[in-house]
Length: 103
Image 1: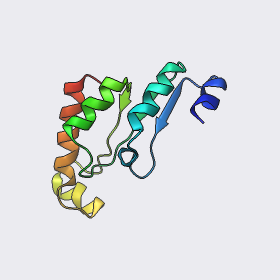
Image 2: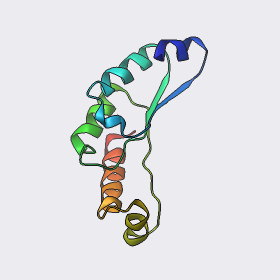
Image 3: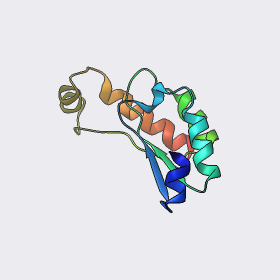
Image 4: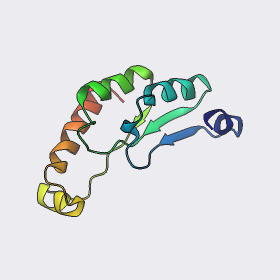
């Protein structure tokens, strides 16, 4: 599918849905997309899979853009919306790691 997207002349491919970090081959997909000339992006979920190490691995693979969902300006609002306590903190951690990685 990545090859087909590149052949259509689409400049950007966003890997999302559920949690792309569930894919052990996410970095491989990013490298392949980059080799096809695509700008590669992903939107990881704020689960225990979102770690500094994984963000750095995605950056090393060449990811161009990473996005996180923030559903409220306070921990209470965000966590209530997500119905999972602690996800606001995970978004903040993830955003720090993304800035650190330079993506």
